[in-house]
Every structure is written in structure tokens, then in C-alpha cells.
Amino acid sequence: MSKVSPWDEILVPGSDFNVKQIAGKMAVPCYWGRDPSGACLFIMELKGDLFAEFQKNNVRVNGLGVELRQNSSILRLILSLEKRADRDIFEGLCRSLANALEVANDSASSMAVAFAHLRRWKAFMAGRKQLMSAEEIRGLFAELCFLRELIQHLGADEALKAWMGPERSHQDFIFGNTAVEIKSLSGAERNSVRISSEDQLESLNEHLFLRTYKLSNLPDASSAQSLNQIILCIQEVLDSAEAIEAFDSKLAEHFYTPHPEYDDPMFVVSVVKSYRVDGDFPRLIRSKTPTSINKISYDINLESISIFECDKLWEGE
Image (cartoon, rainbow, N blue to C red; front, side, top):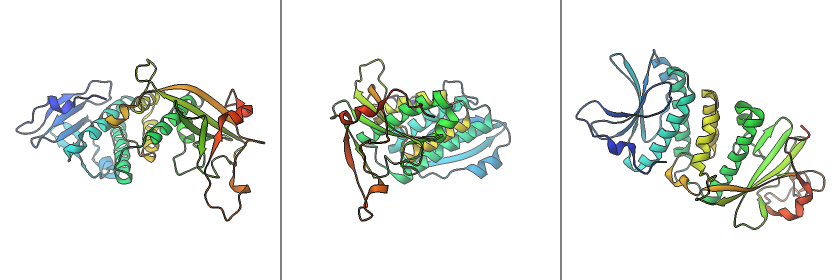
């Protein structure tokens, strides 16, 4: 993410807007802009009669102005930032939106993508103001590693349906008759993973797997990626506005929004392992827990479950 704000290069106008076009292959022209008050703007130029769709889908977001403005033959969707202190987060939102707009086909689908991003912003601002913790960043990065693999296996739409939100399922991914729980380990961690509840390793699905990703912070490695970068890479392979919107919605459920702080750490996936959870796999599960016990969390030593390791997660489907 750029350390120099694009709005720094735009003079404050005496009237109307000063703008700078954003490079890219968007279906509609997009611009960084400033208005006479000095506010930072993101402007999309649209075609057609979209006022009814705007009224139907418009999202009210604290800290942002959202308006559809007709000027002669030019229709503009204008996002304006109210608080300069949030400029870095707003820039991340705008850059992510510009990237997502490359899969839109026309003005209507471009506006739909914009509203999807605004809903993500709203969920983030309403749900939590502070940044994600280091553990949360690592956990989301690991889930995105698996999502990227699942997209290749199932296609974008089915993979995104399989990705469960943090509160909607006991496992991170469910597809077909398979459930997968994702765990991350830092490069310096001991060889164990934390199971946070008695439900996490119990599933009604026929096949249940534990997938672990060991992540090392190696900023100088050529293959290293930040959380922001892996998200942009996934957005680039999504081939429809609907898929972009679904992806944005899932990110909002994890309270992610683009932020320069997520340019670090830079992860390299050093070890990936999969374990089949069945038979004598060591676990504490709800169906075998006394009803008087309400909450369980425990660590599993990975060396002790090596006999359950499997090469392929798709076997048995």
C-alpha cells in the first residue's frame, strides 16, 4: 500500500473538483479527487439511469459521504471522507474498490461492487475500531491460503460458499460432506495448536480435517506476502461482481478492512500439514462432555498426531 497519499498530489479547487484518474482496467473511469473543502474523494463516472438502484441499495456509513450526482451528461458516484484521521483506511478501501472494479462489466455492476465495499466498511466501523491482533492476522492469512487452494479445486463461487464466517460454524470451511478446521502457527511457536472449543473438532460431516499452516515472518523473501497482498491476489482471480461481493462480505465478518498496518508482517508459508480427524484422534468433543462443563479449550501436540497426517484433503469425497 502506498506510503504517499494520492490526495497529496491534488490541489484544493476553488469550485467543483480537482481529480487525478486512477490507472487500471476498470469498466468505468475512476478518480482520486478533492473538493473546495479539501475533502478526499473517490469518484466513479457512470452511464445510464441508476438513481433507482442507488436509492434501493445505498449504504449509510458513519464517516463517509455517499452521493450520486448528475452534472450535464456525466453521472458520478462520489465517496467523500469526513474525518482526515481516517484517510489511510479510506485509501485502502478505495484501492481495494478500484481493483475489484476490474471484474465489473458496466456501470450497474460497478455500482454494485462499490456498495459491497461500503457494506464491508460499515461492518468494520460498527463492529470494531481497533486493528486486528497479531494472532487474528495470522489466523485470517491461513484461512485465505486455504481459500486460494479451494478456489482452484471448486471454483470461486463454491469456495466462497464453503468459507464460513467466524460465528456461523464450528469449522472454518464446509463443502460437500467435508469440514476443515484451519490453524496457523508462527515460525517461533512450539509444535502445537490451540483448540478453542469442544465443538471445533466434532462435525456432522462425513469427513473432518485439521489443516495447519506454519507462517514465518520473512520480509526479504521473494515469496513473502502480507495480509493486504494475499487479499488483493485473491480478488484478482475472482471473475464476477457477485464473487467480489461475497468475498468482501466474508472479510467484513472477520472485521478486516484494508489498512497500511496490515502491510506487515510478510509471511512465508513454510510448512503445511493435513490431519484426518476420526477414530482415535485425540480430541475433546461436546457429545462426550458432561453437561455441567460449558467451555473447553486445549492444546494438541502435533507430533502426537503424526499418524493421522494425510497427503490429500480431497480424498474420500
